[in-house]
Image 1 (tube, rainbow, N blue to C red):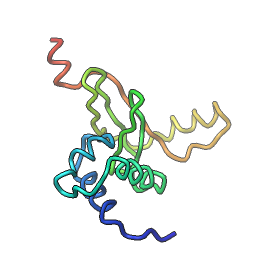
Image 2: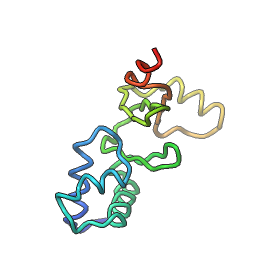
Image 3: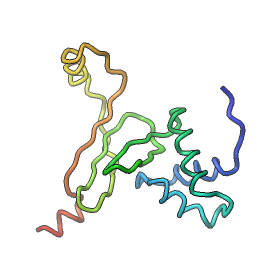
Length: 128
């Protein structure tokens, strides 16, 4: 299916592709206000949802809030339970683990998404 060009969607996509902080829709909205004042928060939500549904970006929920990632390759995420920071973790797919999941469920694993939770380096240093 061909998607028609949208200046607003392109502004949102360009912003997202420069980020590594896995922003919320509100964070993207705040970021692009100077670049394109014609974009409403509802437009940001709608375009991010459409891009995620097409598989152009990843969407995952943390603490009940959707976060977005331009990197659609299989990789892990480390999530700080104190400050909410999300960091990419380079992990190859674990075929042995996928096999165990398939045996356990009778299903078929088509992709993996691994999340680790703890304290980021900055928050861990505060506890030291």
